[in-house]
Image (cartoon, rainbow, N blue to C red):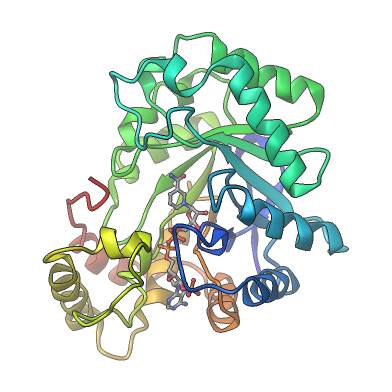
Length: 321
Ligand SMILES: NC(=O)c1ccc[n+]([C@@H]2O[C@H](COP(=O)([O-])OP(=O)(O)OC[C@H]3O[C@@H](n4cnc5c(N)ncnc54)[C@H](OP(=O)(O)O)[C@@H]3O)[C@@H](O)[C@H]2O)c1
């Protein structure tokens, strides 16, 4: 496993991090806690030292599982978590009043709740789970994050950028207040490369590349017949004609890359090929996925010819809407 600096925090995070949404259980169904704990422990054994969770993932359940393995580990494992918007509306828009999402007291109360779930004294990175630059001049979120840092309950702070709209989090990156941004970055959505990533490099802000496998579309075993349990987030995300569209796009990728090339391996290495990316955080609830993903860091960046091919596969769409 190789490690990269998480921006100006100076901490060295594993190139492959652990996305802990799926293990929360409520939005992604079908997981088992024993298997999730096993996959988390294996990830740590294989050098993963950053886990991304959130208070909203299974209403604290993901944080509880993460806290359990981090506390029992004799290695330093960095925990990133998130404050959900008070109105529970994803994403925020320019019209969302900051008071509806992030009042001062509310941010502090959520941070305390996360610490209770994790059973830890401090979190390494606290992120606002939604963000819009319309809030950049407001005082409440700034004071809350600064006060949490000052108290030692939080080591560094960041925001999670709106789905497929990285440019709605550029102004916050200019404030000097945030240490990291989490953004969708994958073969299909390459949009952070144009403005966000250069800005992150300029201001030394860490980048967590999220949803690197497009919620499983880039898993390599997605077909028109793939089904998800009713009530599972993916049953909604891949609704209607979307499975057919995904299959067409992945088939086109396969034609260009060659049948022997692994789609998920290429998808994760794609993210790590950009120097602005500090870590890529695939969701991985199974040992098999942890093993193959953790091994990819050592494979290094993709060759320029492959990156040139992947450039042509950017796909402008928003399945979250
Ligand atoms: N707004 C936000 O801030 C936000 C939103 C979404 C996600 N996130 C963060 O980003 C993380 C990653 O996104 P995600 O979990 O939604 O989706 P993802 O990482 O794009 O995809 C996860 C899916 O890929 C499968 N997978 C993992 N490794 C694989 C491999 N090597 N081969 C084949 N399939 C593989 C997983 O299977 P198994 O799980 O069955 O192993 C799971 O079904 C989240 O866990 C969360 O931490 C943040």
